[in-house]
Image 1 (cartoon, rainbow, N blue to C red):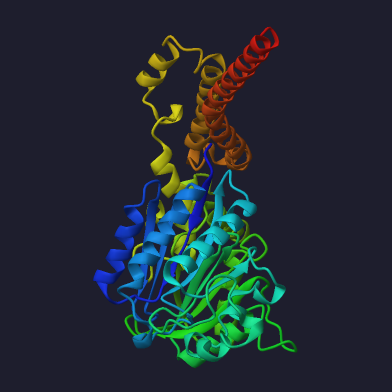
Image 2 (cartoon, rainbow, N blue to C red):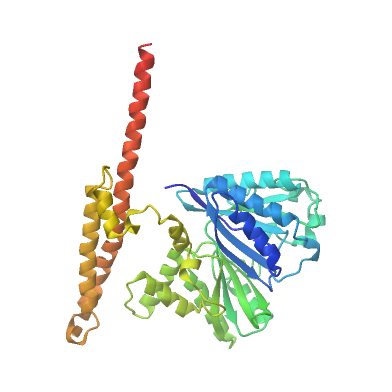
Length: 439
């Protein structure tokens, strides 16, 4: 599989549709970049763009977006609820497929260097790309925000990693880096901004200071008010959803809200979310409420319902879960995406792959699917009620085997093709070696 990196630039404009669209068009027009999501916010006056591509493509896409924004965003006139330091406030690179954190650090450095050269603006590195521990945290780099930059840039300890220590008033400064997948997750409250911020201070890792840490590790948070929705939010960034899962953040905020007698009215994902984060959340509620849910689609629906993810607008999984977005652009050419007729004909073609391995995997997947079908047709029927407990144990492994075997249909063909390519490379190298030996 080709390396795939996600880039999530945040621009300080969330109200002017022409500006938002112009930046989106600049990304979409970049060869090799797939724009997955554009998420503007009026109160925050900020738009989060999400796109994926090869390491080279995402760097070019980010540069094209910045070049466009440079002429149409003026930070001297910017106001909004969200902290920011510049027109292109932050631009992180995140590994998605067959890419390492090291690849993303290289992207951040190349982007930062080229952006500084192109626009003559200060650029800071954060996250895994940070050169000093004091710059690893984004809030630390962004402290004081745009308004503090004139004095900040005069200090030696805040010299930019790239570009001049000179303020370009219309732009400010840009922060770029590499990080794990960050989930921007907000919980809605019928409360004041101050009450929401009080909860944020209690739950975020930073807490209220060194002597009063918060309850949740790897979570940033603040409270704000959404005028367009007439409600407050505890706005969080979950920096490591495997250490602090989505449901932990939601449940902790709900607990604090109950103590203050404040109603929670749903929540919101800003941008995209990894499938694993959603399924981990589903598993929590399945175990907590002793539910029986097998289908992935149903697990996703359960999470949408439990967290109220559609409270401020539709939550469409195919448009919000990154694996679904990436899969839709990569399905073409996969054996499992072919019709049965096409698959059979591809096996019968004059090529070595797909061959016996892929066919065996497909047949085995169908066998597991039949077992799953019988189990699901038995479960929940009154005449077979005595077998419900047995079916609850039998259905999940059949279902898991079906999905795992489907993956091996393409995996076998890909492995064989890779073997043949490498064999040909070795054969060619030996031929060249022998020819030179006899010269």
